[in-house]
Length: 232
Image: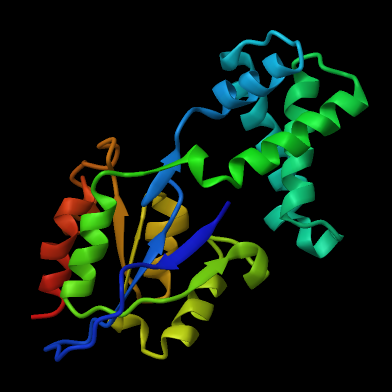
């Protein structure tokens, strides 16, 4: 699910430079799923009397996601679908690839798993997230709204979703920073509209000489000092 969140608590103060807002990607930036998709799907299958391999189910899930993303972009909203029906289709397809064929069973597991992933208990906040949000607040950076790709009618990396965020901020792109973990969807897409995009790279995948070191965050603990450089 593609989400962009303006993180932290609004705190007004005198600032010396144009940076005013911080936009956040949510999934895998501020929080993550507690257990892998394969493990959670297999747990649901076990409840239904099935024994499946988490590795096989995880691979099937990734294949189903690619298929549905290609055939029904952005949760199929232009084709009469919504987020719920799109994700249930992904779940059914995932299990079908693992030789589960009973339509009623597929629908039941899809329904249960959709509800499970909507439950806060299945999500875990990264240890460095809260402090980073508090730091943004203490720096006087504004916050306050949530944009989903389903609501916006467009998904990252299409820059339109960032344009919509800028309209809500009411400031030029140069006054906005964005933090996300995806090189294309977050970093390149935000930079393409003039936002100060930062790539959160916890796995150290983009640490080569061709990537600007000042645009990379190995942890959200590095964020405050990077933002301050745009406020001096």
